[in-house]
Amino acid sequence: MSTPKSTPPRGTKSAILRKLLSRKAGADLAALQAATGWQAHSVRAALSGLRKAGYTIDRADPAKTGGGAVYRITSGPESAA
Image (cartoon, rainbow, N blue to C red; front, top):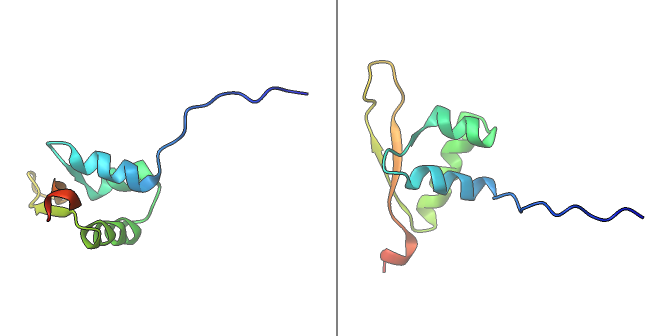
C-alpha cells in the first residue's frame, strides 16, 4: 500500500479572488482571469457575488490608455454592520 502524500490544501478560486482584490494595488480583469482560469463573464459574476455577500468593491479607471479597469476590495462584510 502506498502512503498518501501530504499536500497543502489549495485555496478556492473565490479565496484567490479575495486575496488578489485585497491587495493595495487591486487587480484587473485579465489578472483575475489568469489566476482562476475563468472567462471574463465568470469573473464579473464572481465580483457580483462578492458584492452580494457584503464586500465593497471599488472600480478604478485604467491607469494606462488601453488598460483594463482595476478592482479592489475596500471593506468586507464584517465592517458593513
